[in-house]
Image (cartoon, rainbow, N blue to C red; front, side):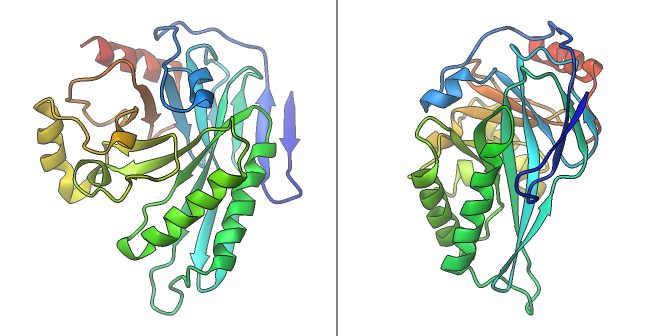
Length: 265
């Protein structure tokens, strides 16, 4: 059965609620991390980006899903809204994190003004994602440039103040933010997920640092890992931390079996 969910015509998300298919590929346990709401999430969270995904094979006791619910683009003094349109198939028991991707136009004529009005629009739109079924947490994905960090910190503060107290707020973080640049310190979030993939010019330096057993310097980045299936995880792992997984192709049960094997190694 496919249900077309709409939140006041702003956030169309298509979710099929089908029969549960158990899969026992990973350990069944819950990780304790900062923030009481995060404790109810499984140890492994799959990122489901803007493409058709069939995740009805997941065991909801072992896996959660962080799905892209919308992309919000800052342009001049406006906020452009691009809701999710691709189908996402899940069991009704799957625990969900609604992800909002924020992007800023970089051309001189459309560079964002970063006004209080834009901040308020972003907060309202992100809060709307809580109205989607099975959403237990909110995640923001914004690769904020240095000039955008004050605006981003203010946005997160306002968002945290208006979220229900038991709803976790997480953000993704470039790995460079976690190992040297300490601007994340003090942000009102439950975790900053270090994305240890697609690291560009910082790749070799950060991989060498982590492979030697060094940890991320920012405490907010010491609660989870962000990995991609097609890149190595050559670092000592703390099994008390949650793992977020990115896949450049649609998810399959075989992908998770392969990931389990990598964890054993």
